[in-house]
Amino acid sequence: RPHVLALDRLCTWSSPFARARQRHLLAVLPASEFNKAYAAVIGGLAPKTHENYAAGLLRFHQYCDLHHISEGMRMPAPYFLLTAFIANWIGRVGGGTVKSWMSGLKAWHDVNGAPWDGENRWVELARRTANKEGTVFRREQRGPVTTQHLIALRSQLHLHAPFDAALWAVACATFWGCRRLGETTVPSLAEFDAKFHATRGAAAKHITTPDGTKACTIPLPWTKSTRERGGLLTITARDDDFCPVKAFDNHLRVNSAVPADAPLFAFQAPNGSWAPMTKTWFMKRCTQIWDVAGILRAHGHSFRIGGSTELLLAGVPPDIVAALGGWTSLAFLLYWRKIEHIVPMHVGKAYDKAKLNEVAKAFEAFRVAHNI
Image: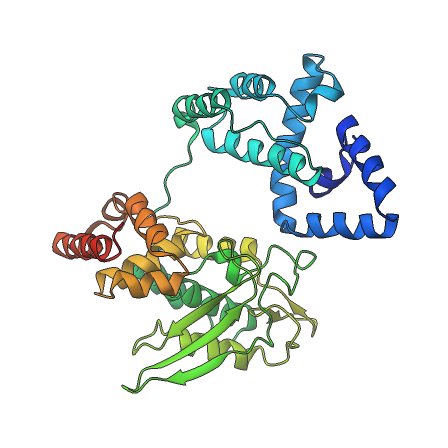
């Protein structure tokens, strides 16, 4: 197991099984064809996935080293070894962490063509115990970004300044478009990849509906749920200071010197070059403003929660909101069931109880209509 970057562990950490399988395949395929096939397998995982799964590989091998588990036993890992590994961490980490680690181990087996014993009942029951015993480690549930958060941002941003113009456009587009923040920002300049992130040259379309409503659609090359099928960021004009279409157009105008192959919400830098709007920079600036305003802090995913909540409480049908955010009917129903109890707790008096009851009724009708 060479000392490599976390994102490289999945494809560089080997095992006796993996090496034997590689020798077998190379006896059948030319090396060039084998390398292309392996690259195709590795390419099926997003770069961020490689990094996220790396922790599972590290923890598993550390556990095996500690208990003198042979290299040959680690792949394919038998159900009792996987169960013992999980049991070692029960009550020490959250169930979500165990789930992520097991996903990493499964991916390691998958890319090496090894059988996976992680569906065994022992493993499933151990994971269930990890979930129950790990509740103390769960992160505080994320409340929604509300219009109060947007008001605070708008009051402190200078929309003629490149960075602020881009930040405001991201905030409005992510909120009203009900998208994940990872779809409107990039991790860093080094991690920007046009295969996964929308660019300035994306074929954005400004449209006007028969009733005069203006909107803008922007293709997204990759989403967490649809992967390479991508999705669509749709923003609709509003007659107030929170209009996402105006914010987007202002960003394009203020940052007009940014090249077409740069990230969609990149901004002009003081040195004449450009910089990407990263999630870290975006959230740092938002948090600074909210702290000064005395508003409860929010997380990146809070924009998606807040936007969908705002639209539902405004009377937009669940079907429309689901389509806007790229959810399937069942996924959206489950999503709302997951967050519906935290919305009143976090928004306080921002919405009255009658509005929330109306949304509950709309979701029941939505459930019946879709037979779910």
